Length: 166
Image 1 (spheres, rainbow, N blue to C red):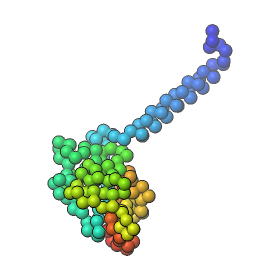
Image 2 (cartoon, rainbow, N blue to C red; image 1 turned 90 degrees about the vertical axis):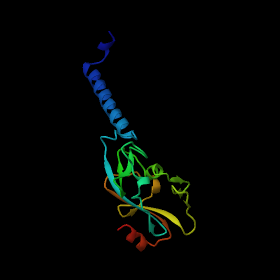
Image 3 (cartoon, rainbow, N blue to C red; image 1 turned 180 degrees about the horizontal axis):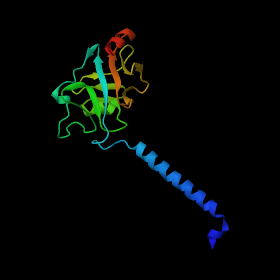
Image 4 (spheres, rainbow, N blue to C red; image 1 turned 120 degrees about the horizontal axis):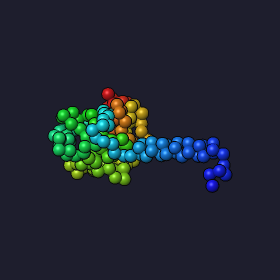
């Protein structure tokens, strides 16, 4: 018999290692999934988007989700509250959220749902601040529960950005 070649503890250790690897692989796979059950995962983030110092009004019917799942069942606004993102999936970026509203984020430019395009240049830039700190990820920032996010386009000073964050 081939099983008598090694002591029993070796087979036990191999079995234990395989079990640990299987459990680790399962949890890694679970964390890598982009979409959760929208009825289970539910988180919120406050946000504001300014263009040239003017705050966009997202408390409009066209930006609101409805019971039919219009826009996105995974990330949306609702109840005519235009400053709270509801997300029902992990790994949702602000780019993804804005695209569900009809915006296009491409090559550093943002095209609004009405067609106006805003691109960075020597003086005008997009800035993304999360919880009072400038985000290196920009629009690729993944929304977390209870975040406070400021997205601003223009040539605002630090003091003006601080006021926008309030």
